[in-house]
Image 1 (cartoon, helix red, strand yellow):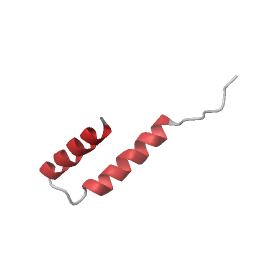
Image 2 (tube, rainbow, N blue to C red):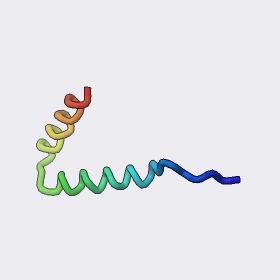
Image 3 (cartoon, helix red, strand yellow):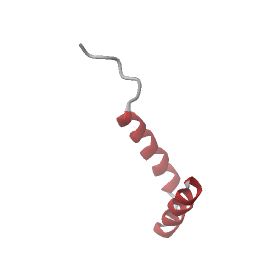
Image 4 (cartoon, helix red, strand yellow):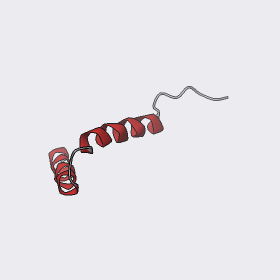
Length: 44
């Protein structure tokens, strides 16, 4: 018997990746690193 999924990790990961791709589109590699570092600091 298969239960109904309440959380779809693959779907969530794709959504996050798509969002980041759009945000990084016009950023240099250094800008991307700074963006990620700032987000990590804000999360802690």
